[in-house]
Each structure stands twice: as structure tokens, then as C-alpha cells.
Image (tube, rainbow, N blue to C red):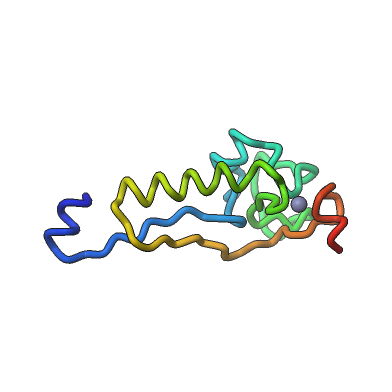
Length: 112
Ligand SMILES: [Zn+2]
């Protein structure tokens, strides 16, 4: 893919959804599956059947940006994908962050 894009003067800008979009509908994303401790709202359980609107306001989950373990993992992923695609730019997502600074998060609640 990298060679074909270079040949055709296409700039690859890889993306990893950061902060938000850590789940979709009734499916948890890979980061929170492997590291459930990064979940900003672990009290919000993934439904078997997703419907909108719902009582939890669950659109998609977020990771806790204040968890001390999250950025070393996420930044390694960013480095890896940028290296793999020989990219000089990166798309960080950062949209649709519905859960941030949750009152029940032991780290974020102190920031409110
Ligand atoms: Zn938090």
C-alpha cells in the first residue's frame, strides 16, 4: 500500500481514534478490551442490544486521559502505525467524546 501510494503521489495519513470512539453500538474497541482499566466509565456496561437514546447516554466509550498507563500504550500505537505507513502526519480522531471528566472516575472526578 505504501509503495502504491508513493508511486501515485498519495499522502497516507493513518488514523487511530484517540480518547473517544472506544466502542461502537454494542461492541467494545480493542484498546478497552485489552486494557479495561483505561475505561472512563466502567460502570456503563455494554448492552447486548444497542439502542439510542439509552439511559446511560452511551453513544461510544472514551478512555480516561488521566490514567497513568494509557499514553505510553497509545503513543506506541501511534508510532507503530506511522512507521508502518511511513507517514509524516497522523489523524488522532478526538471527535465524539461523550464521556470525559466523569464524576465516578477516580482520577477525573478530582478535576471537576
Ligand atoms: Zn478519568
